Image (cartoon, rainbow, N blue to C red):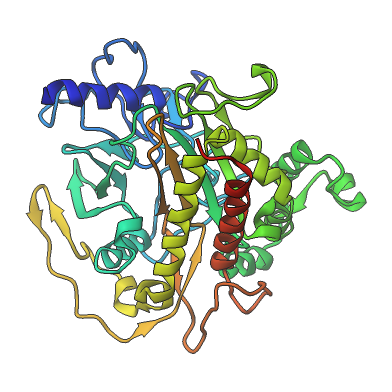
Length: 434
């Protein structure tokens, strides 16, 4: 019975792992945000395992050995993190946020992703490439009132010479899940990143190309003549074309299962993504009405799911108001150490963390809310991605719900959360209960 349940979970993860897409053979080193097995999953030849919030146990159980063969698939919701120990660095994609690789897209919708950034682990857990800032945040969150709203963190491990954060697979208990990633806040880059980019304002033809692919009229006449834009210009423009600047959050991507849940929307099937494919076309989803329509398609108008999401967000908001983590952060949590708290090397525990110092405020940048529901009308929301949640300069505090002006470092997290709750509350009142 246990074995059957395990294989059912693996099958669900393989088939409904959100935001898995194929790439051409010219990316032979690309690996799914999971691990390519040495054998195919029954019923799913040439498929690999990956998920937004996590991954199932390795094929064949904890003792199964994977081959070094790399997959040509790549998860596009959660992408690998690489961190220098002092906070994660923004990438240069169309949307920004999940990665801390200086040369790779941060939104998680663009190739490539590097091999070995995620590994499947036993007992319903995943291993995610270590990021110092995220590891420190997760470690503190396990002792915070926000713990029920984040992936359970199980410390660090070193495997095959690489260091990983070990956390729960958020999709493990869902049957044919539908998944949405909403990036929170009024900006997805740190002010330091903007300042650094301005110091060397080189013209970027690649960013110009990304800009005109979204909006051919966005560049100025001078930029059109140069066929290039500076990085600061691109970073700021990128936030204004979506609901990030207007509502304090934006939809990164959606994957809807055909069996996901209840009611179906009117209109021809060709107008909706209900075949398990990925909808990433939200770059210009900006207005409240557009966001509402996206949520309606995501939930298929299911009243119970909408209510569950709304109530979960209200619980998160109430908890944030009393959370020591959200109001401040331990300075020692971001000090560099070779191993860090909760770390183990090939099963051996590392040195304990240094005692905490006085708390300092933090900014929550590039973090997401992960919405998951399934055909059983289970619906939950989790806070994920803390690679750019970093302490503020000494003497500075945030309110999290006031407009950002360069220098005040406001992240707008609560502004986005409040708008999400308002939208879902409105939708709940407009959809009759079953």
